Figure 1 (spheres, rainbow, N blue to C red):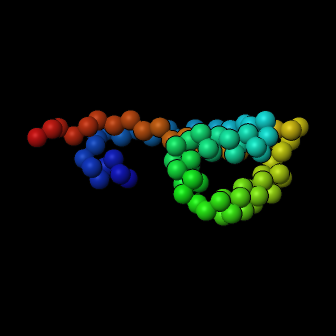
Figure 2 (cartoon, one colour):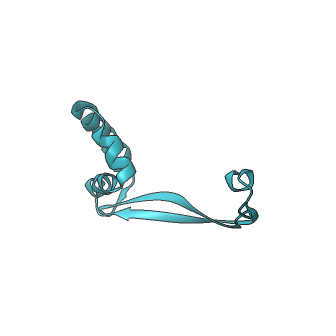
Length: 87
């Protein structure tokens, strides 16, 4: 684990299942554009590649639409640890 490798001690990890919900596939795309990591990645793609990616994403997410809502399962990992003494 990264925390152990960097000298942290008394490490506690909690994994929490979560579900992201969006009003539409377009709402998920808007979220992707709002998250800086995704926004920069997507902005770096040529426009035709970005549009093909969006179309593929929409096809994949269409099967997750229930009652007009898109639900995406994910897991959030929380970690707590004691920092190593500073030198």
